[in-house]
Image (tube, rainbow, N blue to C red; front, side, top):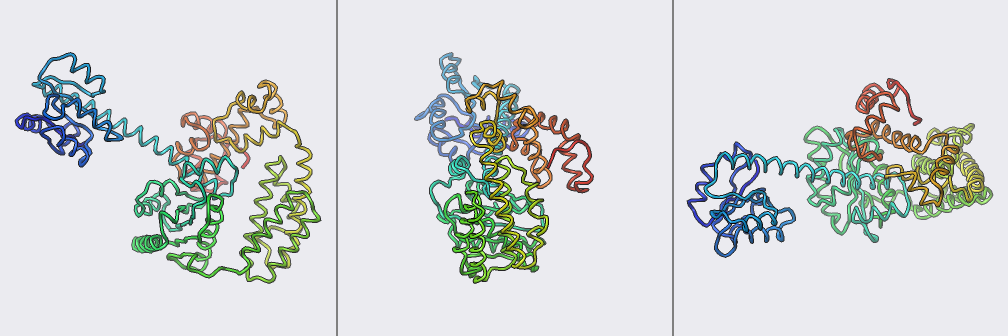
Length: 524
């Protein structure tokens, strides 16, 4: 029911309004009454009604002044219906300037008033839906930024957008909190967020590719004793409803660039506890460091990647030897080392793809003899694999850099690959890269084998397929995230390219596996 506040300096008028109108029939209920303007303002602050029905002539504060003050006082002021015993055009004109919903003369006609209430109820509902839709889009945008960060995406523009949208400017101290429970992600998210009161907490939440729910917390807003208290309470609640969870809280990091590392800390903890059949709440800051040379190893990894990107195979080999020398004197487990190698693989493949190379062919060539890093069972076998991986990547990247030097069309394609979720137009890109639009379109097709629009749609639909398979997001939210503001247009393009509706694709893949999905397929 929508709340309505009645305001009139005559008690008998208030009684008449309260009793003569069937408020509930029109979706309203009277939440309070006031005899003058100051009392009305106080009750508006206390009760927050959606509608105020007020007399225009009152002592101290008139009805029109009440409206003006409410606009200054409230971010979302209520709707107003003005009642007047005077058929004065000037009053009506002033009321219209104040954007009053309705201006009625006393005595009011019950049927006319009922029609007004129906109209206002519909108007309020539409405004609420519009506001909720706007909030959903903002939340989706913020969650998308955070997902890109935990997946390891970087770049100055992404960091700047995240700093503003997620209120993470500067170098605030952060922690990641990750929840892995045997229940649907959305109910899990709702239960967890019920323990957090600030809107920013929900804005800094994410759902990873495996349906785990996570949050990035600022330590200045959420001290560790409070995190521990809430973590234990959430763990207890989930156990009581039959969904015991693993809840992990990372160590403290600084700034946006630490987010992926914090996420990986919690992810590794969650996986380790699940493998051992354990559930409960775990804070990494309460646990000993997994190995004493963590900072040294991190430095060696940075040296390794820097050597690879410089295109110096000899230097790369020396750094690999140095890394394994550091590992030999540490207590790092093989599983952690495999994860490190997999991270190196992913980073190098991204660099190769970004430079216009074939990352899949590169991995096939590297893994020809050694096999995948996940299948390697000891340090001795992992070392030559990592050495070959880095040397081959160094040579390939050096060649790609020479090939792409001063290649503007490559820069355009690279920009589209990174920003396909945004609103992109060929004319805008041509202006940005100082090219003729027609010529850019021709060269783009020659380089990619597709027109600009076909290439852009393919990138977007590839991402849409990934989200349909791996998340529980709504079709409309997926459409918006991959760059289609119009859901109907997205559905049409998806069916045209994939051969089925997004909802069918999602259902068939999740229920029957990828082998059941038929029809045209984009490369995954």
